[in-house]
Image (cartoon, rainbow, N blue to C red; front, side, top):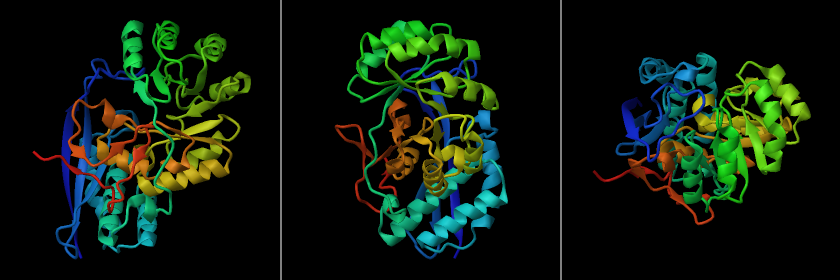
Length: 349
């Protein structure tokens, strides 16, 4: 049996400009993601889809992913369409090379989709998980306060909004959003605050009904995260400080929650195990995403039942999603079609 991998770099426009505190200058109007198709000679006509979002903050580009894929395929070896083999393969990739989460993620998702299609089972069922997870929030990027408030008004039917902060108008923005939206607010500074910023804003965030604060400080500043959590009645959630399962132990007693993303930790299987481990350590769990297509979001939705909070809206930020089959329910939970694998396919051209 021979696994064959095809890769495609997609550059997709965003519906609205989407900027975060650590974004490159000029970023926010389009995204670049890598989609793969995986086939095996023993199962002709069956194709597994995968996706990995290369983030230069973590040292990945489409070029690094292309360079790593052949090595990862050697590590994977011959396909065995069993649940046990999927877990062992994820572990082999993790042991073979450190980092390269997006490349591992794309291949791991494709393997889960392929095996699910071969066995006639949805990915969540392969993992022994329920089909349904918590509802997703909707994320609003940095912009002028009035612009962010208008986008909040348009997204007012979502059960929670995640507001990107880390700019000079954070307080004005949050007050403008609160004026048009009554539900929970989650703020994400993407390492953009100083400790003085956070301490000064904390009482106002509580007053405005903010539910959590995500990654206020640079990834390595666990000392600052600990001090803020000690004085904060709101949970502090580590994102850029929490990439891999081995990061969890060092965050015990530092923050209340962790944000797990498939593109950081290496895919479906690693994310499921990382979320379970985080729960066992007493963390509150957040399942996040990048600005991915429905391929990456469907894979994340397969493990969403393991998370308390869900931020799986990447495909909703795109001007046009090139994949279909994933549906958002009226309560903003991602719905499993019950189809084998991810249940996602390319849109007709």
